[in-house]
Image (tube, rainbow, N blue to C red; front, side, top):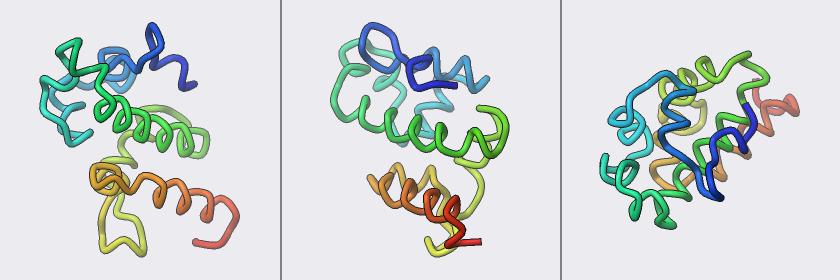
Length: 116
């Protein structure tokens, strides 16, 4: 799924993301490390912090989706697969800790054959 599919009126739309990932808004908020108000209240949805966290998650999902075959499998990997070299943390945990760039670099390294 392209990044544009998750957007609406120039911002990421949490309800579209939740629908595509077949999850609830509460679960999506937990996955993002945000309170449910952050993805349900219009003024909070458009905040820089909320939009940044959503963008990071969408970027990671977009990078692994072609390899895994579907948004649902990408989301499952994102939230449950511990990444080697990150003390057992998942991509989700790293994104919640503002370490999305490290996850993206790791994925690029795996794609380049550096990590197996």
